[in-house]
Image 1 (cartoon, protein in one colour):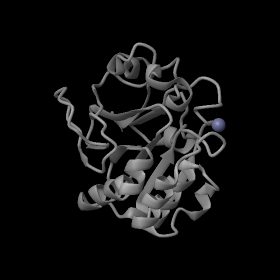
Image 2 (spheres, helix red, strand yellow):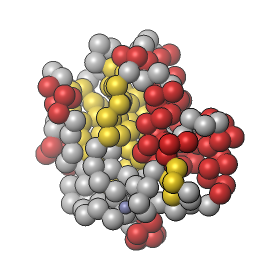
Image 3 (tube, protein in one colour):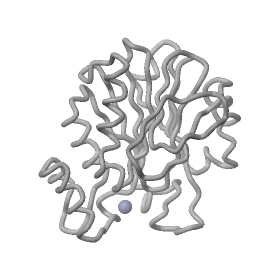
Length: 219
Ligand SMILES: [Zn+2]
C-alpha cells in the first residue's frame, strides 16, 4: 500500500493506494478493515465520465467516476488498471474524494467536476490537497491523435507538458488540470502500472487485467 506521509498524520483519516497483491480477492471492505478500519468502501460503477456524487454506505453503486465523503464511518474508493486514481482531502472541512481519471474522463473534466463538487460543499479549492497514485506512464502510453484532440478541444494547452509526441503521461495531464482548477497541493506517487512491478495494467494484460483499489475516508 502506498500512502502519502503527511496524510498519515491527519487525525482520524485513512487512505491508501493498493497494489495488485493488496487488492487480491476484491473484497474491499475486508481489505480496508485489515489496512485501516472496519468500514464499508463505496466504489462507483465507473464509466469514464465526469459525474461525481456523494458516496453512501448502502451498497448501491452509482454510475459515476468520483465519490466524496464527509463525516466518519465510510471510505470512498475507485478501482484502476492504468487509469489515474486521485485522492483529495480538505483537512479543515474533513471531506475527502476519490476520483477515477482515464484519458476520456480527464479530457472531459472529471477532475474539475470533483473540485467543483467539493467547492459546492464549502471547500476552498486552495485548501484541497490531491495525491495522484500509480497509473500508466508516458513510457508506455502511446495513444491516437483523437486523445490529444480531446484534451485540446476543452482545455487548450493546459496539458501540453504531458505529451511527448504520441506518448501521453496521463498523470502529468491530471496534475496540470488539478493545478488549473486551483487545487492548493498536489503530489504524485508510484510507478508506471504497465512497466513497473506489482500493478494491474489494462494496456499490458488486456481484458483479463484485474483492478487495484485506492481509498480514503475518516474514522
Ligand atoms: Zn511504463
